[in-house]
Amino acid sequence: MIKAIKGTKDILPKDIPAWNFIENIVAEKMRQFNYKEIRTPVFEETALFSRGIGEATDIVGKEMYTFTDRSNNSVTLRPEMTASVVRALIEHFLDKQQNLNKLYYISPMFRQERPQAGRLRQFHQFGAEALGSNDPSLDAEMIILAYDIIKEFGIKNLTVKINSLGVPSSREEYKTILRDYLKDKFENLSEESKNRYETNILRLFDSKDEHDQEIMKNAPLLLEHLDDESLEHFEKVKQILLSAKVPFEIDPKLVRGLDYYTNTTFEIVSSSVGSQSALCGGGRYNLLVNQLGGKEVPAVGFAAGIERILLACETEESLNLPEEKLDCYIVRLDKELSAKAYEYGLLLRRAGLEVELDYSLRSIKAQMREANRLNAKYTLLVGGEEFENNKVVLKNMETSEQQNIDFENIESIIKIIK
RNA sequence: GUGGGUGUAGCUCAGUUGGUUAGAGCGUCUGGUUGUGGCCCAGAAGGUCGUGGGUUCAAUCCCCAUCACUCACCCCA
Image 1 (tube, chains in turn orange, cyan):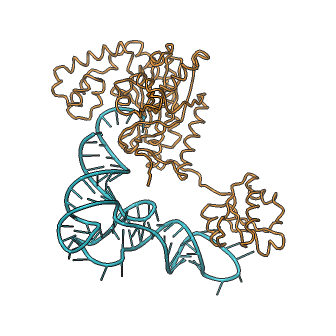
Image 2 (spheres, chains in turn green, brown):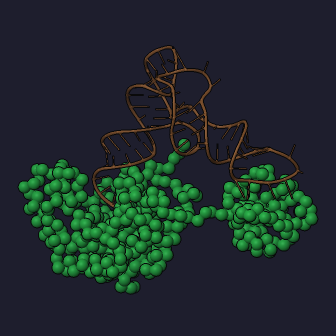
Image 3 (cartoon, protein in one colour):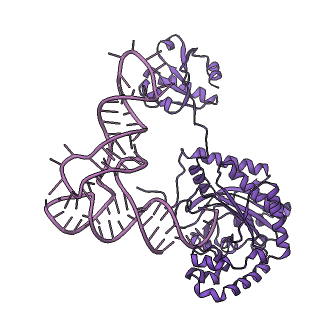
């Protein structure tokens, strides 16, 4: 049996209502905040991601679906959307047509990792990017937007974490301070942290090793070493969040893994998922557009994982989706009347109703059971004595009341059902 | 890439301390008399017990390998 590739999942008809629900809310919220949808190809030139996300990151280093096509070009299935959006912005000069571009997307992403709860190789994100302004109100808007959307799904167990990474110059200064602090403690660090000391020293704060945590407890924090401008920026973001009544906590250890972040970073986590608890992550990236060959365009964005959100909804049972109903099921009382039943079905369908009927000459009982299974609001019984007297029977499945209607009077049948 | 767990019917899972025809619930199908659903009742279909090898008179059960799924680490949505 051929099965779906490891880490990929079919979204079956039974799952679709939840997905539609989420996608509709995202689209509606984005509309309210005036973000316009953008769709980009699922694969791009590999260089876009290796340059945009950062050569040293795990995503680029070991998680990308990269292959050479028949023309021997290296292409990659997108592991995230920001680089693609920035590419499209530059390619189509969107930044020159208007100074602020507010864009959103709902799209599949691909990363070749070991699957686990809340982690798939093809997964789906919705997200937004605002390109063209360094105003802290946009940093806050991203957080508010993400928070408001996730709130709409009824998830209660949420924590918004924010931090600021400052600008590269102050960050570099801070890194030397941190290195100084760790110098005499280096030998006591875990092997992993020793490696990170070189590659990404900020991530030492993330370590789950108890020893490391003990060491890092008293380490100087980046937040305490921000330049004045970054500090002011961060203050404004916090103020806006407070007045917007978005509960948040400052997490000085929140160091996002991607290279392009500057200033604000944030994450929304839920303990209703497995260990992969981040439902949403984002931040400001003022250097990326330039880095990818565009002008200096300050920008901020976020991405949220739909599968993780669905997991949280599931454990919190927060999604109460409307029951699926069928307007009418056509029941054929006499086997000879199949064509007639089919005809009625078509008429009602063309009138805009949701209609089903039996295709395999099953018994009346079987048809009624099917109607019930499909949650039909009405059944239209075609045949028998009534039919000989030019009538069809319309039965309300909830009240069990039925009425005879002149069999040519389609209009009144439709009217009743509607 | 590393570690743990699990593979028995479409789904959720029992079970055999190795012994004849492997079970339940749900779902599906058919029926419970003239032409009517839900509840109830009866019956039916459906399984190479993940795969390959080993031990044994005998393996779904024990041993080994392998694959798949799953959770966790790393990292991320």
